[in-house]
Image 1 (cartoon, rainbow, N blue to C red):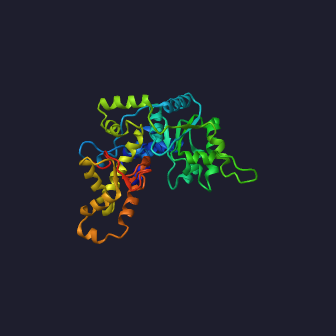
Image 2: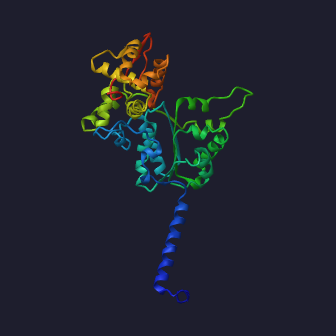
Image 3: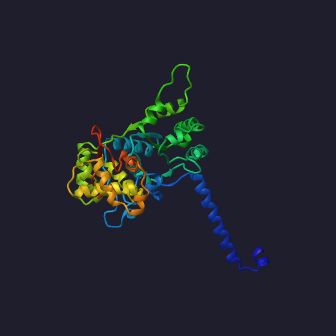
Length: 361
């Protein structure tokens, strides 16, 4: 009857009706699935895995942003894998990886959840409009078979207004039988872990009581350095063709801070490319000194005198009396992994330490 009134063929109108019904069904299914999206639809960098290293094929830094080196499993990965197995078996679990900057915490979480991708699990990264608000608004809507991604968990648990409510809601999520299984993964720097776990003095406020209870027994330390076994695995991957790892190991193989080297390299190059003219001049003078075989530690007076010849006339005219101190301070500001393009050498008065390698070559 409607088709006749509209002057349309009945079959076409019925097909439109079936299409509309199917779209409504898809929307309902998506809503019933809860927040997040399937793990396979996420890119690791969208979950705040640091871009690792520079492009090695001549494309420059733009070609490196989507590259990840091979993954080297360490002791904490075994604990993460067990938490994933428990979640697959139907038991809700939570682990927060604690470690200093760029030690591989977020990458470890990303690798750990990959077995859940084929099981139909979703991943939710509360982010918009701000992390704490997003988490608190939708925590009660999390459905079973969801990974709750709390990278940089201080943005959630440490929020002055919402942190304790979020901690209580996460605890309720983990203990609610109707929402199991869920897997909560997070990362924290050690200073935040100490802050949230510290007991208050008698009679003093306890601003992190719920966060402390939530984290108790659910934190896992990530070491700053690769141990001997991890270094052997990394060298093996490098020999098999992983050029990012192989390149990083030329500098970090001795001290084991491999992940910091990988995470810091793009930022170090960006610091050089976008630095002020005096800062770039200091780095270029240090680079040429390194090419000519000068020692790793350079006298500040040597660098300052040499850098003048790397500046154009207008840039020289703009120099202030304290230009070298300001440029060194600019270059000493750390990036990921506590690295810096240039910094003062400890216990060597008047010397500047210049880290050779991919940073400046």
